Length: 237
Image 1 (spheres, one colour):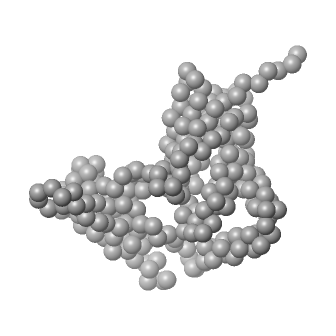
Image 2 (cartoon, one colour):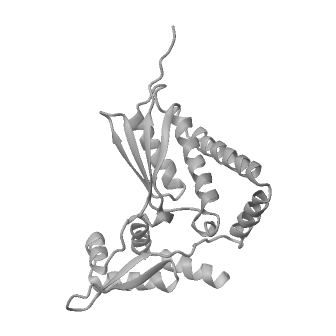
Image 3 (cartoon, helix red, strand yellow):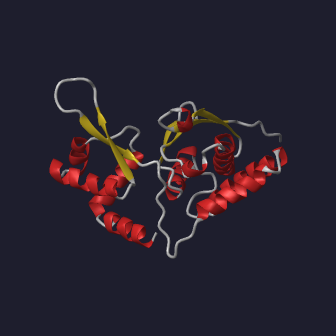
């Protein structure tokens, strides 16, 4: 583990390489050497070298895109399915999470309900911890969306928002799942937990909303996406 950590820190210490790694995470499709070279304004050979370094430490994986056309097939690069964690000293939070989820599973439906409730509470706390003192008391939904973008980036979700001021609705797309390595065999529980966590964030900031999942990356979709509809409540005098 120590050697692995040193390899990762060495590879990601290069600013351009780290930028390429983040670029690949945010991409919804596998990328090519040419795409990386153009995005970072570097020679193709340099881009290929950076990509090779990222694949050598297993944080990026590559494959040939054989389209059956003439010429050499393109090599595509995408984010690895293997989790990448660096900590000093080494701590196995994945094992702890798996044990905790196993214990909750033994409690049946009651355990799941508690898990989902706690997940929603943690989502609310994420918003409570934001410094909103620099904003007016009644900030717009567009400004709140910017706050959610910052929070999502801190959580490593690589999320994007599409806000329609005319209809007062929002689309929320997540490109990276922070619970990917815990999903196997427990996708319904983990996805529901994440759903409630996100719902907690949104309800704390926007109060009355409809929060609906549209796509899930574990159903062979490119991203997890949600539609958020803002509800206007009647107030009594």
